[in-house]
Amino acid sequence: MRSAVALYRLLDVLPVFDGDERIVTRFALVPGSAFDVDALRALEGAGARSVSWDEARASRYDLILTASPKGALRFLSGPRVLLPHGAGFNKALAEEGTPDLPSGLDPHYLTAGSEPLAAFHALAHGDQLDRLAEHCPRTAARAAVVGDPTLDRLLESAAHRDTYRSALGTGGRRLVVLTSTWGPESLLARRPCLPGELVGRLAHDAYQIGLVLHPNEHSRTGAFDLSRRLAPALAGGLVLAGPREEWAALLVAADAVVTDHGSAALYAAALGRPVIGAYDGGRELVPGSPMDRLLAGVPRLTDASGLEEAFHAAGAVDTRGFADAAFARPGQALPRLRDRLYHLLGLRPPALPVAPHPLPPPAAAPRRPSAFAVRADVSGHRIAVTRFAPSTSEPVHHLAAEHPEAGLRQVQSAAVLWRHARPSSPAPHTDTWTAAGWTARILDEAPGCRTAAAVLTPEHCLVRHRSAGLLSVRTAPCGNDTGRVLRPDPTAVVSAVHAWLGSTAGSVPATLVCDIGPLTVRVTVSPAGEADLRHEL
Image 1 (tube, helix red, strand yellow):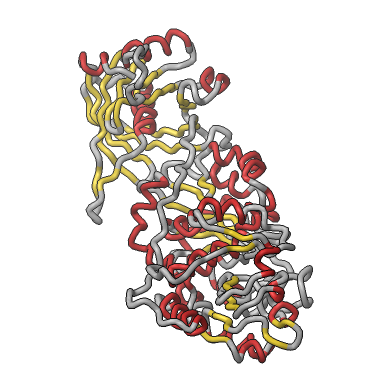
Image 2: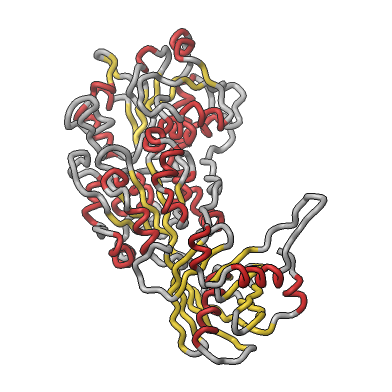
């Protein structure tokens, strides 16, 4: 392996050896890549064993697997197999190899002297084989189309979509995933503010924004600087996918993908996801390539304000046809690779069937925003609530914030303050607030606050309003025609009740109809009972 992204490709292929005690796997880091910093750490996380480069050079192996032809692979002894890397040959990198040749087709990397570097070159599509024959015919003689093991893993994981969306806290929202390749023409390099602009402009209860970065960008920048640069968007709920498996889980979970010229969008297209182009042009994209044709055939996003229009337009485009030009033999990559690899090993493969491992759920849930600028439109007993990031330029009704997580400035400015009930403490001595006690304290300490809410459960809140007093607020879950049960964020319901109390002299108990993002729910407001008041936070 030469980089983290090459390692991740190898890990997608290694299930071909599942169940075979004859196979011993060792990893070696080929020196020379600027993006190798995360590779050894990822190996350690996978529990794999590695050898030093000097030890690797001094040994002979029965089979050498690589997902990149670059580096000093010619110094390793044993039959080499070059695996698919990315979704075809869509980019030409001027600073590497032969100018203007697509990455992956350069004889400079594919040959060792006059001989092909690999004993077998695995490809994902017949068009790739034709292009390889054009640029490097001796290597093409050792190549064959097996399919794409990474795509097959995504397809295998499609049935887990609801699990991934649940782990992300997506709910009934539309998940829009931004994908950025690496380098100077990438989305993040050209439009670094776009993730934050989308998080700030779009209604929080209607849209969730995810960001998938090429593993090279994770390696180049590092988690610390990425978190710092994206801090405002992350605070607003942006989902930053991890580089190994989370990126793929986000594509499975997505409702649409906004992309530059990186190959992640072709994987999304193969899943049938709507695609929106956001590539600003340059020299890297190969004309006529599958990625070039995809970008030419989908709506384009010029700025954050056009996302909703582009989202609806993208839904009318069937993207799978574009992916068909990059991927062949879906679902067959691992069986075909296993036959080839065991032939090179001179072994009979196990009788067990081989299949991709489904992707695990995303490990880290996005940060829950601690403050919202809230627009509330009240019409009798019907309230429409739209929540934005506090920095929005949209006209709003009030600021709502979580106490004390939102910070002093927003807490002092908020008309609505809330707190979630916490799990019981394991400590032997505890000191907790009741819902009645905490809400009374908040209205005493925050003179600008009109409504304090203790969120007791996802469907039940105790609300203390300066004029209306103590109220129990219960939200009925709603269903849809797919048979799902959906619930809105209870803090959005609190904002709806706050707006209604401030605009009407209506009496309690009352039943309200609240429109929150894509959901319409019924909310019952009644005088608080003793159990509500005594509920411990």
